[in-house]
Amino acid sequence: MKSVTEGGAAGFGFTGPRVPDRARAQVHGRFQRRLAPRGCFVLASLLAVVSCEPADREITTVRFWAMGREGEVVQELVRDFERENPEIKVEVQQIPWSAAHEKLLTAHVGHATPDVAQLGNTWIAEFEALRALEPLGPWVARSSTVTPEGFFPGIWATNVVDGEPYGVPWYVDTRLIFYRKDILASAGYQTVPDSWDEWLAAMRAIKRRVGPDRFAILLPLNEWTQPMILGLQAGSPLLRNGGTRGAFGGPEFRRAFAFYVDLYREGLAPPLSNTEVANLYQEFERGYFAMYITGPWNLGEFRRRLRPELQDAWGTAPLPGPTGAASGLSMAGGSSLVLFRDSKRKPAAWRLVEFLSRPDQQARFYHLCGDLPARQEAWRDTALAADEEMRAFQIQLGRVAPWPMVPEWEEIAIRLQDETERAVRGRTPPDSALGELDRSVDRMLEKRRWLLSRRPRVRPGAVGGRG
Image: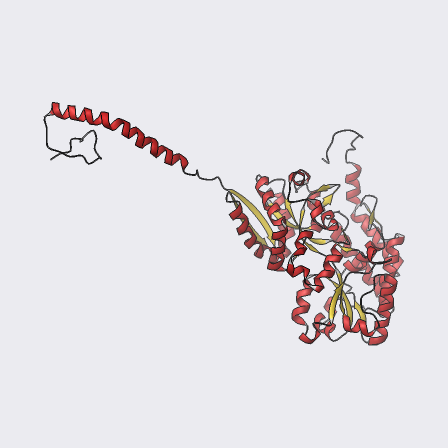
């Protein structure tokens, strides 16, 4: 038998005996009239179901360049970000620190920069001068997550050029004192003093205690941060005339430099570089030096490398200042998150920056890699709050200042390191070394002076930009 719906209602499986064509037509007509409303209902139902299905989301892919160890561990945070923001995919490219600067410059020249990147905060001024970075003032103004008040003030300032923020602090770095509590106590001091005069007296007492072959403090000559920090503490601007000339010959820096050089002349510090110390941790352990100015990465190193019986014999302390604790500034270091001007995905990239800036994510980042949070709220995390040695870093981070925001800063710092070594080793008088340093810095900044002299002036009350 054939289906009566053959050629008309095929597919519904209705079969029956063969009938005459006329009768078959009548039956077929009645069947269609009955079917029509039902077919419309079924079709409408199918359309309703289809219309309720979620449309394919348009995925925005954000390219994120992160450096070193941070580039490895941030992948875990990115996975959570993508779960919260399913319409955004983040491609993380890990870049070695040794290649990062050149790769970023090459990408800028080739208009191939990522959407968001980790940037050492001493690079902010350079990339801003190249007009590579997106000004973040408008983004911060609209954000309920990224607010300047949530960050350590001195750290936030490292991202600000001419009043405009160009980065958001991601993690922070600074310098303070690691010291042998037992040696300091044997010299008559229970804690590191707050002022330069008292600190100097404590170092002299330690020297008398340990003898001629050991020292109160290690200040490696290939580390420029120590004399520069003392200059900040003494009130030196480091650069003058709007960052166009050196200020190292000024009275503030000369005072700090004299204090620093005298530590070697009195035999309180050995005139050595790090490369001349066979094993820093072993020398600290055997008491070759009782104090060392260094950064947070050494917390883990001291805990791993020192013998168990010495774990209670060392501690950390904020830096003393010329007139007391309040003047005990240190450097504001670390890395920031930046957006690039060439990015076509700035809104999605900014959402990633906001996510990584949240206090909970900053605390988690610390647990993953040990980098100190830039957000002050993140320091309420139990692991941070209960860490006695970490407490000194929290205090010190409240007393930090940025280096001058000029692209030439790292070159200037290396030149200071060279002149410092010459003065310490007696090859040139300290004042002569600083005079030569100022002359070198002035030459480095000659192009900057030329460019600034040609920058258009905006009349008071006129509307203008930085251009």
